[in-house]
Image (cartoon, rainbow over all chains, first blue to last red; front, side, top):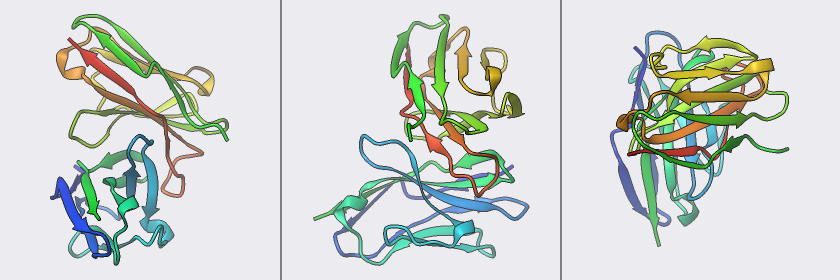
Length: 108
Length: 115
């Protein structure tokens, strides 16, 4: 069965420091992976998706099929990046699976 | 454009009672999702509709949960009877179509507390 794991429940970094949010998955096919974010008092929203190869708000994520990982990275964290981050996997348009989430706290 | 609407925003019921949630997706979106998010966990897909047909309901506890999407627009999710472990936020999302190119847009959620 498809599964997404995020080993850190909480990650705290100082402003300006690099940040990496870890995501690992188990899936037998070719997955499509996403990062969703929920800022305080806002709705869950898409941050970026592997299929688009994009960088959003300075964040990037690289799919490593050998390590079955899709870690989210940003070289210089900002206070406004503080939020809940969810890694998710799409099984060909059905059975979307979310990870448990990592709360990122960027300290001043 | 208007976002995904959900009502009610909050609901408190006693166990064994029934409850229903309503979702109005973004106009023109063919795919609609219902998720259950228990405190401290990620959202779990309960059911996915494509227009008014069910694509996936493998994780829907069908002995107590039901959902419908009449006319392929609005949707309702019902729990009957509720159990304590059903306490969660119920999220509705919609996307233009199925597949990874289609972004899911989420509603604000309905927070259900079962006493």
